[in-house]
Length: 284
Image 1 (cartoon, rainbow, N blue to C red):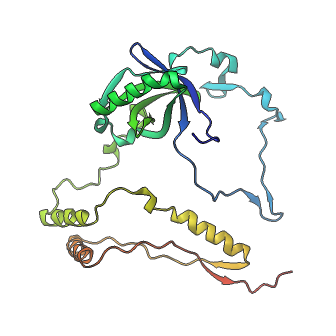
Image 2: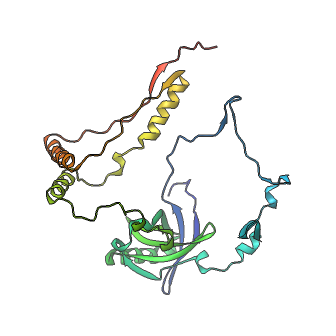
Image 3: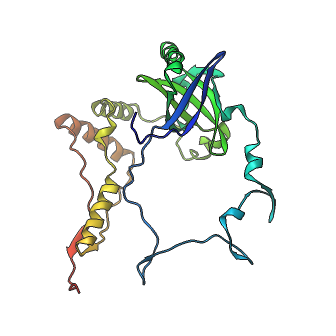
């Protein structure tokens, strides 16, 4: 395990009467290297924010408590000790209460993955038993866990030599699809066009290798920053927007797409770059 890795949560994983110690680690690492700050342009200095109360002014962070608004400008306040006093078993235990087929979970429910590791060698035996049982049955275990001030619904599944925990959204957090698809035509599409689309998808299908993709926007932003550091003037240019077409254009586009994919392999998309010219301003 990497030395820099720090457990996000420590507690127990329970399957009926089997309880083992586990630690949870972030399975995602932020790679967004370009992040912007708000800058006061005349001075070039960073904009800071202070915590203030209307009619009072600047306040101390130690005087801030959690508050729930029950009416306009009326709050029920809670001290940290009162919040901590809320007793939930899921604060310390991930209790696998139900098992479902992994394919039965709508992908809209998935929020964020975490690695689940045994705390020590003593917990390892029960850990691998649960892992193998999940693998052989093709099931994922559902449980709830309290992290960061809320109780999450989670799914536990085997991943390589270990277990992964996926935080799930609750059903009432999802918007209704029918509220957004009212413009979708009710009539069935032309069979020939569907067959062409299926053929095109087949030609472009391959194994999922996420490492072949990059965040091209971040790459372009880095190049832009480097250009600015070299004193170049950035010139914005309009990009042509893709245009829709009628059903005749769609049929022709599908036929041409299938033909093109048969003649040559798709070329790798290049990284967009901002146009730049050297500044005419003399440096001081």
